[in-house]
Image 1 (cartoon, rainbow, N blue to C red):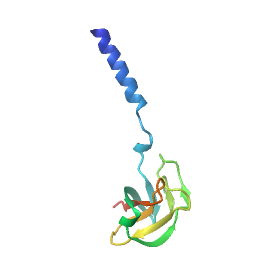
Image 2 (tube, helix red, strand yellow):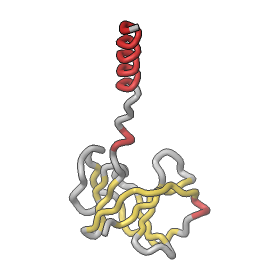
Image 3 (cartoon, rainbow, N blue to C red):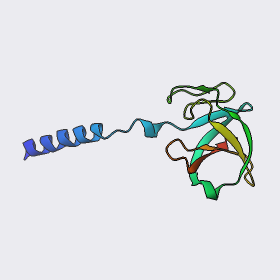
Image 4 (cartoon, rainbow, N blue to C red):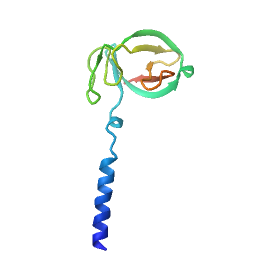
Length: 110
């Protein structure tokens, strides 16, 4: 009985350690006008009213790093357009990297 418990414990430990997803532990962040914006929800193109284009990402840092320069991000690629979001104060939008028919919304950190 003791051997079975030890084997089950070892198998459980191995399975848990193999199932770790690194990407999910980092927030999508961007810097705009000195403010930090955090990635929130992903919405369909038709579900968001985009305002004016406000600029493009000029620097991408590693996903585990905190961006600190104007128009930098640890998630968005260089040259990604940023937009104001109509009727949503404190939000910016950028095309979702994995689906061009969706946008990722970023909310200002207060």
